[in-house]
Length: 505
Image (cartoon, rainbow, N blue to C red; front, side, top):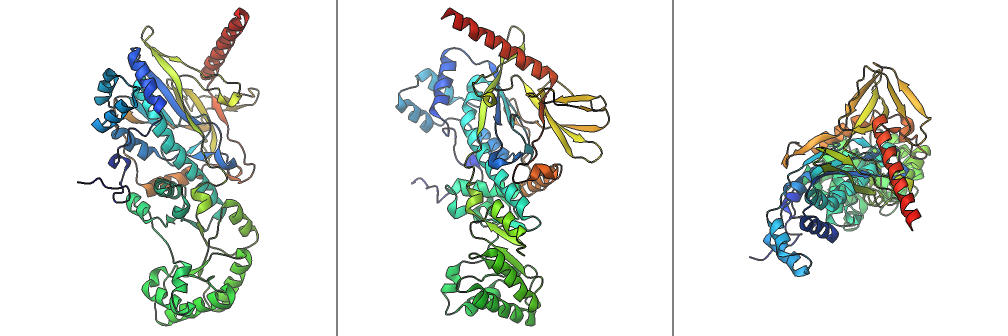
């Protein structure tokens, strides 16, 4: 039987596609190197990002469900092994090892829809090094893309509030996956629905849409096109009014159809018009005036046309009475910030002699690229009285915070910047939760619409100053005193070694 093409078979999850070779070649060559060297000690890798995208003060973590699907389906087929054999880089004993490969480690992650910040582990992988190394590329590919689109969509939704935002960027997305999983991320971040029917089916999210200019142009006249559409879809009647002349033709014809629907008892809540070109501020104001004068004060005015958070914010400042927004290209591609920049770094290596993890640190001439060492977790600290965000503290995993005790927070760079939280004045939440234990998944991903609700709750804990589109207030992301001390000790030790090597030369 002939193999089905991608477009004949669209999976409902990544486990329906075999993604084991969705990796960079050097992950496999390093795996063989570890295998040949007899190195398969437990290690810890952290997946995190260094800089908030789009000039934001935070990001929205997204993609965990697809990471789980990927790991659950992680194995090498005979076809995979035959392909790797053909590259002539891999020995037969290593290929035989891959034949029985499966993930046996532990994974901890921050739940999808969470507000997250730079340098925090979004995903922590604890596994033998050959396994942990293989996860890097696919894990970053999934988390980076969906977190980027979720963060961009969050900005758009914030700018449009209280109006709703519909995602409809599929035709401009960078391929089917980007359009479909990007729609998922956008809805998690607050969009009311998507035009992507496949995303609607796969993730049980609202699929919404109106009609194109071609619908109007294929009828003898605009009024006939509107009447036909209204008759077919009285419960979803949004009429596109800018095909010929928005104010002289489109809006008057829409009003005529709405009057006919009202007279026939067919006018349903949610009816409206859509503007897709021209001066949206002026046209929406004039359309609102005409609709109100005709008695259609509850008529929705929807707008599209290359919108992003900045243009939406500008239109709202101009008093545009737009109540619904359709956003495509600039959101689904995150046009002004096309990558998330997540990385995957070794944080600790198991030492059999001490039966403990040895913290590892990466140095760099770029300060922001110096990593936080060790087996870590993230604590989120809230004001106990109002539930608002105060700070995050990155700590070693075995550290605990007692909210009944005083807590001293300090900036890990400008250490003189300190805040003392009196015991009893704050609450604490550990952000990383167990996902896999000894290779078995122990986490059930919520439905997308439930993640959306959770994301909205998360965003409500942020101060308005942190949600500004331009120059937002920076969040306080601190290190525990113990982690700060260990990091400094490692930096000083490595710096001494560098000086010794320089003197030898």
